[in-house]
Length: 305
Image 1 (cartoon, rainbow, N blue to C red):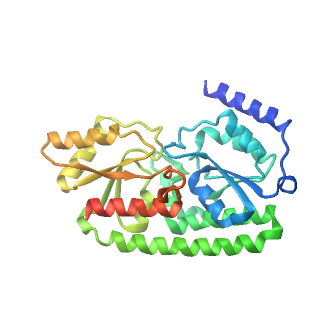
Image 2: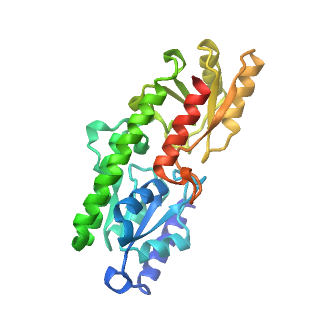
Image 3: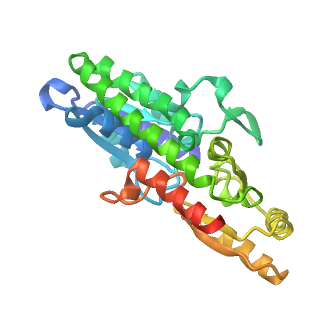
């Protein structure tokens, strides 16, 4: 079935390609299409007045299981440049990106990060953990990749893009400092972050938290009663007060942990909702990368300190 869907989408790519025109000269601004909104936020900040940015995956969307729609294919085909994460985050779209790469600039921004700085997926050691936006110092490599992609496509505005990127990275550095200062308020023994899936390992390494997830790096991985019991045993033994749900993952798994801990006499609460694979709604603070990051920091600190 999956093979049939892929073939159908690639047929749409070919059909749309015969009937569309791209290019910055006719349309004015550079048309940028990204997959996740975190990358869209980079493009908007770096590109400023010279770009039009569209992100395919909105609030609450799980990129691990996302399948491209006909309108997505049309948007990709009309784009001047495409930025996606890579490292199998958007695993259902790999064939589409391969097709697009033969037609226009198509950049996997996370794959610009040096390999020795990446963590491996414990279940698939040959595949890096794709959730690199949770370490701001790693995410700046993605900023550089977007800046280079825009500059190569639109060299007349290269100096503008580079200055915008420096301004943005300065704000990212300030957010990184804020995160470290806030996390330091949590007692060391309480710095344990329990979530539905393993999206936060880079975050944990960067800011000194132990991270535990019910599912693996991808939400396509399964979890069972043993996984639930493993988390229950840990939160009980270490007297952890809160666990967290994710905006793009069903709450059922974390609720099972809360109920199971309660049945064993340990009071555990939902500490709040974190943004993991998707950002918040557009036109809100959480709909920006920095706003999302600070929301997560504040939510974690308030629940665990």
